Length: 271
Picture 1 (cartoon, rainbow, N blue to C red):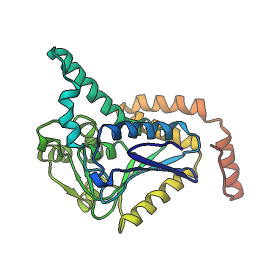
Picture 2: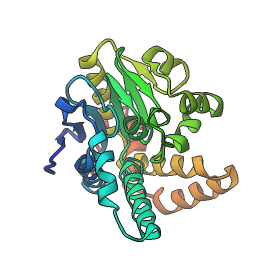
Picture 3: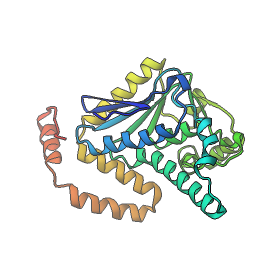
Picture 4: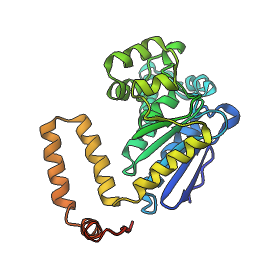
């Protein structure tokens, strides 16, 4: 198992549970948490024993966004007598934070975000990089960057329109208003609402377990093809999946699945 300073990670029956673990700070994202997030998903991506991931938050909130102390320390971190070099350092910081968020998307294992309480700013950036999202009734979402005088720069403006459409995404990004769970369900930001936090986590883990019961090769391929298809034309995406299946289709998994279907038996796939 991986050991992290600001997140916890456990593995149970092929499902990894990764939790933000700064409950006393509403799981606000300090510098270490960004790095731990990437480390956690690089572990999940590389460990063949992991077949699906649930991302959740400890305490009362999923993630309340960037820790303001991190923003206050940024000026000192990028300080340079040369204005050009100072700006270059800031660009590197932003690109690194973007990469930390994109680690969820790069992870070939499906990621389910289980959201309760606040999911704001950077927390929403991260949730949008998951494959899909479940929520508790108290979940609140918001693109909050405009309220602190900045442009959201680590993923929401790029991913949110693909989830809820351009009009709603622009409204949320430009107003910074809160979206409660019921509205989030209506606009397609989340897939389901569960009765409470415990039911949410159980539901997310059950969905992850169902994914984990499928062919790992087929699941990983499906996620990669979906991601590619989102960013490319239909023609290019069909070409891509043809290449994928030509390379991977002749596998023991498809033979096992076919035989199990004929015999009406359960099938177990190796990692």
